[in-house]
Amino acid sequence: MLMTNPILSDLWEKSRIALKAQLEQRPADAVFLEGSIAEGFGNERSDVDFVAIVDSGLEPATMPYILFIDGRRVEVRLLSTHRLRRELGQVRAALGKGRRAVARLSWNLLERCQRFMGALPIHNPALIRTLQAELGHEALGEAVGLWFDDFARQTGRYAVAMLALGESDYARAWIKTAVFHAAKSHVARLGEHYMSPKWLSLQLERAAVDPARAGRLWTLLHAPHDDGEASDAVAAGIALLRDFGVKGVSLAPEKILVGRGKGVTSWQIGERVHILRDRDVFALDSEAGRTWRAITFGTPCTTIAGSNGGVVAADRRRALIAEFSRAGLVSLHWKGGGEIRARQRATSAPVARSPLISIDGARLSADLATSVQLLPMPAERFVEAGLEMTWANIGLENAREDALGALKRGQWRVLEYALQRMLQTACMVALGAHGVTPQPTLEEATLDAIRLLPLDDALIDGMRELERCSIGSEENARNRLALADALRQRLRNLGGEPQFPASFDTASGWRGTIHAAYDWINLGAHLDARFPQTAHGGHGTAEEARDLLASSGA
Image (cartoon, rainbow, N blue to C red):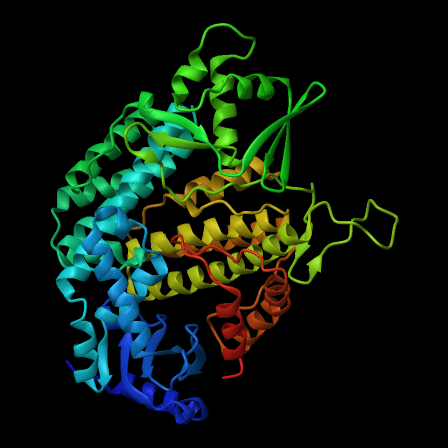
């Protein structure tokens, strides 16, 4: 169907005029609308996402041009038919190889294909339909369903692993992620292919999913971390996984095996055990050293923790194995199922007691009298922490924009998700300011902030209240948003950076964001640093970030 909405048609015409120089150099063969508005979910604060198909012989940048027109944030992205055909072909080829190949597709690639397949044509719909036919909607739905199915299985297994290691809060967090993505897999099989997680509640309604099953999902997602035994929460989550069609997860801690970490070697110097993870060195105290020596790779973690003899208690051994896993010193495997492939990453502890990194670079320590100070971290880790802190700030502004749009439209489940994202990204800002890199996953952001940073009880209580809040009225929604704003400010203050431009509100706010990120991106590109992880497991590149900077002049 050709787009006939006069407001959107007018926005595209104004966008085309604003980008006259770029589009005259590379005239568009076709134009379409993609994203939440095209999918029928957007609200007044949603971005308007236009894509122009251009074939000029050069591969256009994947990052969009950012415009602010008539009070709306408009993104215009350029794609070539060559890239579209290549990426649609990658999805089709992965389907031909089976579930594991689909699971290895990056989130970014699969989402780009999905957004194109759900496009609303503006110009030359015949070309758009011809390109879409190279994959087909049925194949797309199968790929999206398989991708979420695999992710739900892996995160469900990781929840069992955290339970086996005595990490109750982490087990609760990951089982909630597992059932959320199992629900996404379920609605994909029912024709709801849009991958963005924040619209799950509306997809459940549109797909007419059994209300009782959806109710059990929301009950689990909103359950406080101190509500009953963690094993009961994991068991309830596994039951929901099965109801949503995800198999291969069971409440069997003995299935969790300890495997080798990648790039990890151990060295003893005198009485001290040292673990090398690539170029990082970890020193173990006596309990950690004893537990490390007791590990036989390929053995269940419950067996290692419960072995007789020794001076380290079983609970302490479990906690240390969990710490080894968080640091990337060991890997966790599911018996008969290989390494558990959740989003977990090798995080670190803060390298300073006070904020070390700001948007303007390193903070000088007031405790040191020297004018030239050596930072307590190598250059690559310094720039990675700065990039991640900057990206987390942008993510925080994006989540708040989502929250305002959901509040105005009365989309309470969408608002719940946006407030949770606000809290998680605010925690990542504070962690990044203290030099924590790589950043934890969204699932673990609040738990790691509580574990690693000097938070007072009132702040912790507010975080726990908000993270799984349930909203049922406008008054309740406004109160929760006010709480989220207060927590956001406190966490930013803790990181020593109380202000950040409103990235998604105005053109001046976006320019301020670009200026804040510019120097970090340039240094990251110079050092070939690892660029920040997206919410869903993909990674940006230095080239894409440079494209982002170039777009700021539009």
